[in-house]
Image (cartoon, rainbow, N blue to C red; front, side, top):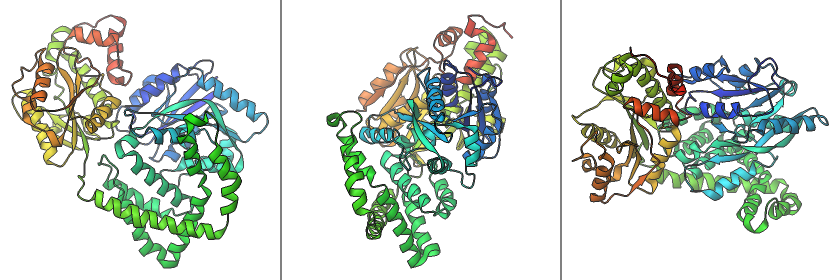
Length: 579
C-alpha cells in the first residue's frame, strides 16, 4: 500500500509517454501485500496522459529534463524511505508478496554486508512464440550475477545510503545508465538475485526484430565497455532516422562505425579499438557456453551448467593472454564489418522507411456531434466528455504499440482538434468517402501508397483496445493477410492489413452499422482468398447498455475512460443526470 510517511520502500519509475503501460504496473503495485511503500514518478516531459494517471493514483509526480538517469536521480531525491526500488514503466509483477519477499532477502544479506543490491529475474511478455530459444537464453541469463548480465528491466533494489555512495545514476548519456550503475555496484559491493521474477514487455524485440536488436545491443555494449562514448553521442542522430521503422535497420550503425574509423580513430586507433573489443569479447566468451547449457536444458535439468563450468575451468585460463585478444579482435572486425555489414546493406536497401502504422479514426469532440446514440441517454455534454476520454486512451494505446500513428479526422480543420490529441501524431488526414467502408479503404490505400507495409485501423470508441492488442494485430500479419478484432455486437473494432494483399473489395457490399458486418467482411476475405486471424473480441460503446456492459469488465489500460466512468458513478451501478 502507498504511505509516504511510514513507507518501508520508495518505488521510483522513470516515464516518458508511458500512459499505455503505467496503469497496469500501478495496479500490480497496489496489490502487493505485507509492505508499505510510496511511488515516485520521474517524468522526462510526457505529452500524453502520464501525469493525469500518476496524480490520480496518489503517486508523486516529479517533472524534470529528459534522460532516464537524470529522471531517476531527481525522483530518488524526493524519497522518504531508506530503501529504494527502481522499476521500468512496462514492468509487471503478478505475485502479490514479491516486494515483501525481496525486502526480506535484501535485509538479510545486508546484515552481513552493507553494500549490497538486488535484482529480480526476468520474464518477457510476448505476443508471439517466435524466437523462443533466444528469449529462454535472455531470461535465464538474468538469474546470474556476472558482468553485463544486470540491467534496468530487472529492477534495482538497494539502500539509499549505498545509492548515494555510488553517486546515483550517471547522467552523461541518455541511456545505458543501468549498465554503468550495475558495474559500479559489482566493483564496490555485491549483487544478489532476489526471489521471484518480474515481467517486462518484449515490444522492442518484436517490433524491431529479435536478432537485429541483439546485434545492435552487442555493438553498443562492446563499444561502451571499451570507452567509445563518441559513438553514443552520434548514435541518436542515426537512431532518429529509423525511429519510424518497424524492423530495425542496422546499416546506419555500421556506416557510423566506418565513418568513425576514417574520421576519428585512423588506422592505428582502429587497431587499438578492435584489440580492446577482442579482449571484451574474450572475457564474455562464457556466454556461448552458457547458451549451450540453455539449449540442452531439457536434458540437463534445472540449475546445471556443465558447459559454463567447462569454460570457467579450462577455456578461460587457456585464452587469457594478449594474442587471443588480438585474434578475437580480428574476428570481430571480419564478422561485423565484412560479413554482417554487407549482409544488412543488401537486405536493408530499398526497405520502406515505415514498416507499420496505426490509424485512428476520430471526430471533432463537439457536444451533439459525437456518440449521438449514447447522448440521447446520458446527454450531449456527458457523451462528449466520455468520448474525449476514450480518444485519450486510444492515443495512449497507439503510443505504446511501437508503430507510428496516423490520425484521420472527420473533415474539420486539424486546428479545431484538441491540441493534446496531436502530440505524438505523425500525420493528420481528413477521412475521404461517404460510407465508413469507403473511408477505411481510402485510409489503407493512402498509407500503402506512402510505403507503409502493415496498417492497423481502429475507431475511438473502444476503450478495450490497448497497446498489446495493437501490437499483436500487426505481428499476426507475419502469418496471415488480415487481422480482425471482433466487436460483441457483430461488427469489428479493429482491422489490420498487409500491403501485399490490399484490395478495396474487403470493404464493399457490406451493410454497415448492422450486426452482419463481421460475417460479411469474412465473406469478402474468403472471396479474395485471404487468410484471416480473429483476435479476442472487444466492447464498442454506442449505447448506455454498451457502457454498462463495459463497466462489468473494464480494461486496465483504459485509464481515462475508467476514471470518467468512476467519477460519473457508473462503476458503482449509478448514473449521472442528463445534461
